[in-house]
Image 1: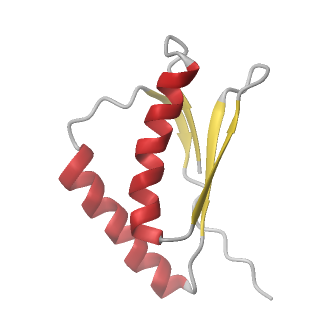
Image 2 (image 1 turned 90 degrees about the vertical axis):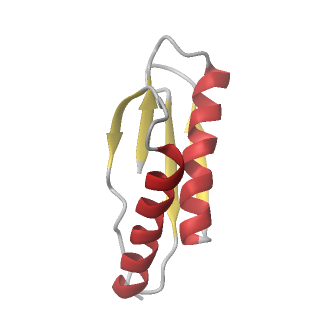
Image 3 (image 1 turned 45 degrees about the vertical axis):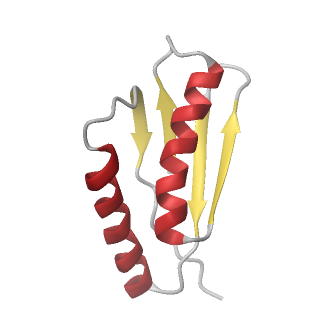
Length: 92
């Protein structure tokens, strides 16, 4: 998943918003990593989360939506664009 925030935000403001979203996904998935790229034209934040199988993914996805609904529904995130490349399962 990728987030790019408004260009009018400082890098610290962008990181704070990414950290808040990362907290939501970490609580729901339990296994997430947050990365950021702060050089050049692509000032983005990237996240990956782990899951056991597609049923587990569905449960965690629902947990994310509940947290967002309960805690961040009215928050201004200043997200300029995002990617929902969330579901990628690597098979052994």
